[in-house]
Length: 108
Image (cartoon, rainbow, N blue to C red; front, side):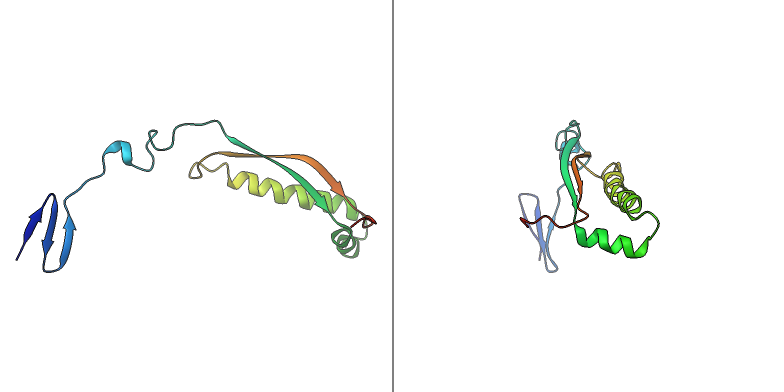
């Protein structure tokens, strides 16, 4: 037994659709996702004293430089991830404030 109701075929196996998505409805369509300027994410990066102490134990020579390199590499890797062509929208990450606390502030 088969019934046809406005493009919907109903068979013993269940309903099947006789429908195709128009080009404007495809996920890569500029109608759905227009070419927009990249979104900018402004972040503040705060490295606390516990992380600094950890790097002092691991890198006796120059813990401050190693921690700076590590934190900037981490943010850079996230930034590169969002620059991939498969990611939409394009995201730029900008560090607007950077603090490395060698001693924990009293107010925290």
